[in-house]
Structure formats: C-alpha cells, structure tokens
Image (tube, rainbow over all chains, first blue to last red; front, top):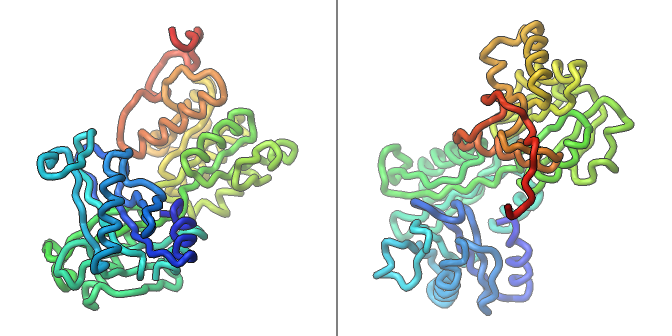
Length: 105
Length: 270
C-alpha cells in the first residue's frame, strides 16, 4: 500500500476518483501476498500491482466498473481452475481474491 | 479514515485495517482502523459493538506478529462461525536488523538487508570504524558496546527481528551473544571460522549459556553457499534468515562440517 499512496493522493488532488484493489486471499501458488495493492484512477491510470502481471488488466476493468457503478466494494476471484468461467487466469495455477472499492472512506 | 491510515503507513507507525469482505451486504466494506497503544485508538466500526471489540483484539494480535489474514466471525463476533469474513491487513513497521561489528562484511550485509526491507543498525565500540560514512545505507550507526546497546533496545526486539554478530572477537561477541539470547529476536547468527565457533561455544558455556540457548545461535552464520566475497556472504546470511522464518531447511553452515568458502569458483556460465 505504501508505494501507491503518492499516486492515490495526487490523483485525488487532481479531482479524480480512485479505486483501490487489494489482494485479500491467495490459494496455491500466487505471486503476491495478501495486502498487495493496486490503485486505478477514473482515467485508467494505474499504480502498484496485485499479481505478476496476469490479472492486472482485468482488475483495471473491475476498478473502472466499481467507480462507474454504485461504489460498493466488489470481491473478484481470479484463478487457473476457473479459466472456463473467467477470461483471465493465473498461469501459476493459483487462485487470488481481490477486493476492489473506491477510495472514499 | 483513509487519510489517517495513509499518515500512519507513511510515518511507519504500526496500524491495522480490518474490513468486512464477505457477509451481510450492508456490512461489506465497513472498516475498523486500529492503532496499538498507548493510547490504543480505534476509528470506524463494523456495525456491531461486540464484533468491533473482538476484531479490535484480533487485529492488535495480528499486527504485533506482522500478519495479514482473513478471519471469520458470527454477526456479533462469535468464534467458529462464518457469517462475516474480515480481512485484517497489518501495516507493521519494518523488521529490525542489528549488526554488531563494523567490518567489511557489515557493509555488504547492510546493503542486502536494506533490499529486504530491514531497518538496520550497525553497532561497534570503536568510533573509528562505526561511522555513518562507512555505512551510508544503515539507518543508524551506534558507537557502543554490544551488550550495553542491547540493554537499551533489546526489549523492543521481536520474532521478526534479527541480530547478526560479525565481530568474531571474543571480547565483543561473547557478551553480545549472551545479551542477544535474552531478547525475543527471531534470528541470532554469529560469524567466524569453525575453529572460532568451537572456541566461542566453549566461552559461551563458561559464561553460563545452556545447550538450549546455544542451539538458538546460527554459527558459523549463513547458508552453505560456498560464499567467498562479503556480498556473497551477505546473501548466505539473509538466505538463512528467510529460511528460518519460513521453517524451511536448506543446508546451514552450522549443520555441515566442510569448508565455509568454496575453494574454486567457476566463472559464470560454466
């Protein structure tokens, strides 16, 4: 989280809304531990990461969706075993859960 | 609340964020920010005073251990129920490494320890060697006797913290190790040849250290990598620290009998 605070506050100072995505669970092999965080501005700017690069694109979409919607937090799961159901998976075979929510608290 | 949390994280004050990630829809996203005391402070609420109380207690426990985890509760904080899932994220201050001995190996170990995120203190009783100029990356350079320094800061050391004794001079390292053994540091290693280690172990026994405490000391310090240079030795030491914390068992020098340094170094790529 620490490494993305500057970006979050800069975007907010520019009047932009920001979504925060945090890894809250990792099963099996996963590249980043719970707490790994990524921020997305309403313009689609990105800071930080939640995986080894496998699901960042999908998380940006989820983040923009959360900002455009009711603003309620959304728990998203990405995993190899779900690759039929999800367009994006982790090549490492792990499953990660990512909580996406607006930074408005 | 985010601003308060960000301030704590930036200034490396310990703080935990607890958030409902699964449960009744109106609770999901509710948050509790917990700062350990004194004075203990709590911001926000998870919507139920009993749940707040239990999560506050658990968050303080996880924060003390530096653990980030999801825990499950009943609607009023009951154990062994799963109505509410709470993600507890610990923002613990960086772990500490105290290095005794301002030697060449120290400079390399400071560098590798900084890469791993340690807050590094170099301590040596000799003011000529213990200078900030020699260890620019160290967070703190202290001119003091090791046992005196540990007398001052030893009580702040916990399982995430590390003490490395690189003095390999019995005058310094025996009191340093004896003092370090009275702390809760998670790792204690001491540098020296196998002969130095054997002699030091005898001195430690003579100083009243029992076998259980002696078994806490990783000496000769480091993994059996065949390290030669100070930088390679620093990697061997940090590798051992990571492995012990993770409960893994790569070969430590302590548990081998062979030479510490590789006598022949193959060039890269062979």
